[in-house]
Amino acid sequence: MNHSDRRQPRKSGSEPKSSTKNLMPRGTALGAVEGVLAKGVPLDGALAGRPEWKRMEPRDRAFARAIASAVIRRPIALDAALMQVLDKPLPDEEIKAHLILRCGAAERLILETPAHAAVDAWVSLMAQDPNTARFKNLANAVLRRVVDQGKGAFLDSDPLEDLPDWLAERWVETYGEPVARAIAIARSVPPTLDLTAKPGFDAQSFADEIGAKVLETGTIRRPDIGAVDGLPGFEAGDWWVQDVAAALPARILNVKPGEKVADLCAAPGGKTLQLAAAGASVIAVDASPKRLKRLAENLERTKLNAEIVTADVADWTAPEPMDAILLDAPCSATGTLRRRPDAAWAKEPGDIANLAEIQRRLLDASFAQLKSGGRLVYCTCSLELEEGEDQIAAFLDRTPDARLDPVTADELPGLKEALRPDGAVRTRPDMWDERGGMDGFYIARIVKA
Image (cartoon, rainbow, N blue to C red):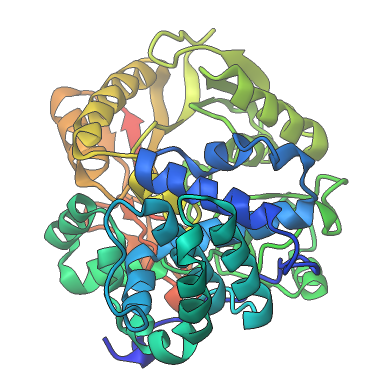
């Protein structure tokens, strides 16, 4: 691949000032990378599970996350760079030493940490462990030379190879190799910060203040995430964090003030906030008390109202037939790898079929809660057909009183390419690539006859 075809990663801006001596965030990142790549542990859990995590300053936590995320996004590209410097690969059993080299290379090539800070720190970590100490001189030599000798191989590495084989093969089969590679490129760099504001909020003035832009759909986008809770308007609850694609399902549901609406599988609550801000009477249902606690906190911060119900959506019965329902069904989350690079390693091929069965049950149960003439928006943050296009086709076949209500181009300003011929919506991470991309979603609007 030509170098010009690749978007360059942004600098993290999170490196602690005492980076040479401060080994804690780097050690935390190393442990988290091992948990994700070797054991399929979610990144948040791998980081928070480290005993030192709670003792770390926010800046150090951000730095640890930046290192770990960089390695998880580009493991094979980093190996390609290292192989330009190593005379031969490390023995297969030297897993930890290999991961230390990967992390150090990620700092040098992706986060662009100066050699005097990154190299000394990773050499120290290599020397601390009796099982890896004999590689400390090797680490010193490799990490000092990896930028000059390995950057070309890093840039030329195929981003599809940074994915689990089964997932890359699925995307190539589903979308064709050029699109699959474009998706892989989009998930290989850090995401933007996307915000949804309350109706009536002066989004343009706010965007100008924080160095952001207002996208065609109304989402406020800033290139770098940074400290979200330090931005103006956070405490006042003027806005909340929500990917531009994740904001589309509630927009497409198009609720009216006073309508009775259910947000099913609602936590952490971005869509609930949208529906409540539009003036609907909202019931937010989710099976996870922990995630619903976060939703309640978001409602309190934004001064919006919704009834919160802890229940399995498949077993929940609405107090009365609903005017509208939003079902954001549990899924493989393969469309969110820009924001959750670890999700690629937490799934296996068989999970898709298992999740599709859960989605089928939730669709049938949700549709039953609609009044006649009511509408349901079904969405998943998955790129897999079984969880989107195929799921809705099967639902319509078995549900005589359901019909697809096509989404129009006017409802998706600037995103005509996401409209399918049948009127459903399919976003992909490579769409709006020049502006930072978006999560991959499938969205269908269904009306009860």
